[in-house]
Length: 566
Image (cartoon, rainbow, N blue to C red; front, side):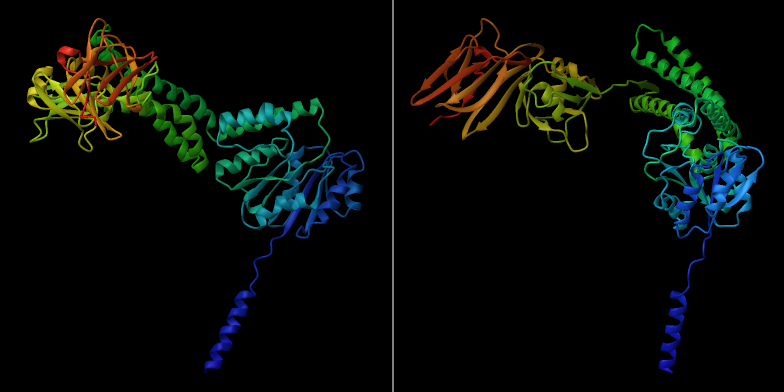
């Protein structure tokens, strides 16, 4: 019994592995009009391709020896008594063949190779695409660049083939039943457009360099007319003219309405010289216009989608509607800013928008950030049990020139600087006494440019430790920037700090060690102070920037104070 089951399993496996895929018959159609010099060579090259089953030459009313050349080369020949055009020739061959895959190849290619033919057909045999079209290793033709590409980009922007008028292509016959064959030179671009709109997978295949006769200007003129006619007729058929013209107009008017809303809101909140009523009228008019035309855009778009559904149409819609989408996003962002700035209290709705403050240093400021966004900052109460601390974000510290653990004296009280709590953003937390001294209330919004003004005359003690040397700087926050001096401090010829600040004229500034004054400065010039076996040297440098950091004068203490120096 066991051996019987094993034999059955082997037989079933053999049957499964031996099952072959359905054979796919391949036909090649060659449209030819007076191509006696090249048609036989093209036929012979195609015969070298092992999976091609039949070659049909459609002799489109030739007056030379094209027919006999094709027959002698081994092709089946179908004759048109008169010249009907390339599209008709392709359609004639298409109707006559009984196959799975059809390739269409021009009869005037001098350097056609079997490899080029194989690269056209193989993706379809392998199921990678339903249609393949070729591109060549040369610049696109004049008709392509001057007519086809501009029109396709306008009406069918999702189509981005390098050479939409390649001439050579292949497809499944079942797929071609969905395609409307043009009777003339518009056949190539017509197939590309139909495949795109219908969602048929189409692949552009590079077959390398080709050589064929250049068409005279009279033929190019006729070709251009036929290509333009085909693109325009397809644009009408698939609603792209409506999309560009009618929907395009609705989109433009919608953007006008949205822009008026934005303009009105901007004048209401930011332009004082324009009366409030004018801003409201502008916004109301814009609202009416935008709603009216956006509804029209939506209705027309739905109608078009129902007539011509497909992912490729959706891509074009996105490109056409993109300006409207951006305008809506801009307006929504602006409205969200106003909503975020709304406060409702005691039956009163107050909207007080404040934008971020962009800081760009125009001089050689020593700040770590030459460009940054800071504030606006909102005043809030101190955290519980932190009546001796001021919490502020790093951006506010940068503007005031203070650091974490610095001491700020406001009035007679001193407060330690601490960083904002996680997630609080631009919040400055001030104890009650500090708020009273600074003249600000809870919820007060301070623009970055006014931060120094609010903390004007606050005295800062900034403690530092470097190379086991402890020292502090003492300065006053001032609302006005002035030209500052930059200097480096050496202790026993070892650099311990670099700093900068404003030294006012006709003032004295003292340096202390262990709380004892060891000397004074009367102007920013190189100075050396000595105490016991220690030497403190201050070397000034050239600087061309300003600062709000005013060093304290003698009457307010030492601007530079060292701990005990050994």
